[in-house]
Length: 154
Image (cartoon, rainbow, N blue to C red; front, top):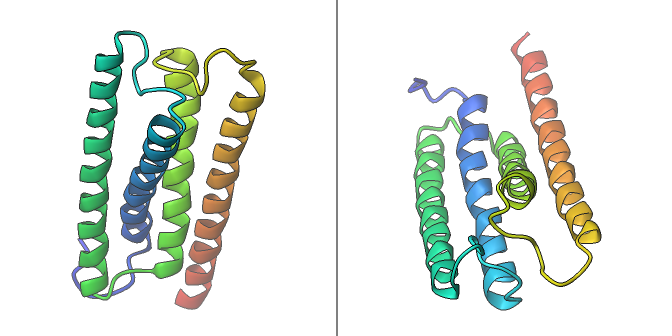
């Protein structure tokens, strides 16, 4: 564990990735589950079970958000936070959540679909392409920070 106050790139990425997962889960929960009402987290049962599953997802997202921010604040307090690496981690976490949801939850487990009663292909393409774009952008930001820190260390 780095307690010296030296920049900790790996932990900066990981703490922000947890926050990114939580933020994307919150966006999904608030926009698609609550405002648009397109689906619940688990749609293969009664509407009551769907609401319960949304509540459980919302609880998990809040726990991840609080935990991620405690980790982030600890890094910042010790002077070990690498802000640009944290931005990369945030994007990586958001993209990872969205891609996992789009592939595993929607297609493999079939817990829910983005919408019902419509042709799904355009929705699935936009959902998963947006996820890959977030992942690629996060990977690029993280790679840039890592390559610059390697150069600065020489």
